[in-house]
Length: 404
Image (cartoon, rainbow, N blue to C red; front, side, top):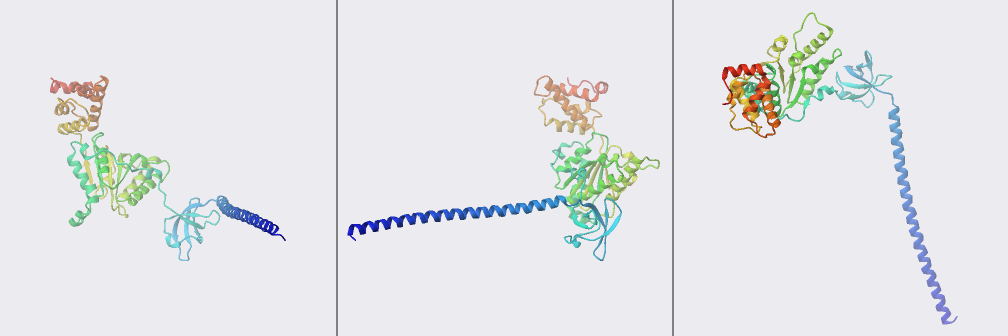
């Protein structure tokens, strides 16, 4: 073989080796791509299998028969329990394997199998939305500085409600029990609800407010249940304050000749009496109630041990009316020549709510005349409007012209 033929053969072999190496690298790249696709397909298969198992589990759950809600009446020594279902009498039933008997107690809410009535699980205690919605989350904007002429009443309320929650050690040192409840009585518009708002703002306790009429329900036993759940919520949220407005709507005197509706109100009242002074201690739960008809309240409500402190909230006198005028006027753009003492004399017989209405009406008169300053004449017209022309003329005749 010549030298040139030998070189051509070596070049051909080298080219073929390069082609083989290039082909090999292509095959390896293709193999890696196929392996990656295989792993992706396997992961997708596993994901689909998990999703299939989840859907089967969800389908089985949806196909499961509904459970019955019941309450435990007794725990037996052999591990079984006595339950009362929502659809029938008491039953002695077994427990499901996943139910811990150590967590069960008499009165607990449980779920029951529809066929065997076996206890399938422990349910959390349920509170009525009326009760849970009664908790005041956002603190009211009223403060003690917004209340005029009720210094004595505020001292008594703070002694009975705030001090036991903020400084309980004082009562322990003295050796007395703090008052359980405070009843605010007085005519409408004298500031009873405003006092409760101020207490809610100035304490860190949970504040729960209900109107007495909300405790009166249509069906037998519903009102008593609401009262029971109301105090249960207060104990869970302790320290807490319960404020019952318009107490006379549920706490009226019990009569012998009563209709079925009256008897239901009386059942609610008896549950309220039991909660106020029953076997279950209130602890850090304080009660404030308000009523403008104390004469019709049941005597059992008014005795010491339930509402220990009855605070009368009278209509404001002349000095108190002047102070209330100043409190409302501080938020207004008024003329500096207004005599608040003279306003208080002119507004004889007005309550705090009336004075608030007078200040609002005075501002409305200024707005009506396109002014941004409230003048003395605006207050004169507002007093005339709120109290009425006859009353205003009668008072004007006694004290003379308001503004010279």
